[in-house]
Amino acid sequence: MLTLGSDEWVHRAADDLKNQKLNQSDGTWISYDALLAKVGPAYADQVTPEALAALGDQCQQALDRLKAEIAAAAPDLILIVGDDQSELFGPENMPVLSVYYGEEVVTHDRWGDDSYPDWARRMGRAYAMDAVYSFPGAPAFALELIEGLVERGIDVSTAARVDDRACSATRRTCSRPRRWTM
Image (tube, rainbow, N blue to C red; front, side, top):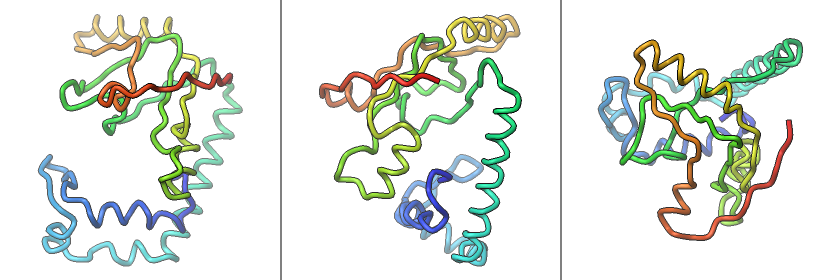
């Protein structure tokens, strides 16, 4: 959501209002309507335009600080940890932990199509998911990390390549990546 201005967060919220499978903290699923009936409008005061604008300002300040701290540290490598929301893995193979050790990280076009609204395409650009891009990987570091995890008894999934699920599922032709250097 932080790729959008706080005035555009309502677009993402609209998806929640229609969502029939919100994931609760205990792992059960619930629709928005059922959740609202269960807990009431407990957070209504936190989603006013004014409250969202203030939160958006706080988030932007935090991102600016993070950017400055990273620039000051000048790290050789940044390890990105994230959740997968059916972007790389599907229900047939959803590892608890997977370490990618490929030479390049290739993103896929999820939000670049003109059929998506402007806000979704802007979000896609910010995530580098509006086209196919290639970013350099860190295979030596990743393999060392994998080895260290296994030595400590951690069962880790690994991947040297991850295909675009949309391409393989529909058998459509997917374009080659745009190369980015960092």
